[in-house]
Length: 100
Image (cartoon, rainbow, N blue to C red; front, side, top):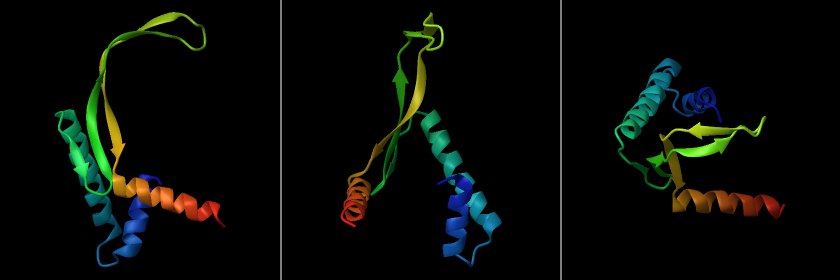
């Protein structure tokens, strides 16, 4: 699902709010999440999962095209851990589809 599809889905379910307002709300949520991760804060959405910013240490890598060694600098990257409820719902959906 893309961001625009998310906005469309929410707009179809909440018809009392304009699509433009829903877009502002979705953008605000994503911006708040990005800002929190930038400040090394943990984001936890119960029933869905949690986001943290993890440090990936500097390392030596390889250019896959040439095989040449390259230095990969230390960086922070967002990391998502799925919540128990979401994991169970996705697994249940998979099980239901495989039994059809």
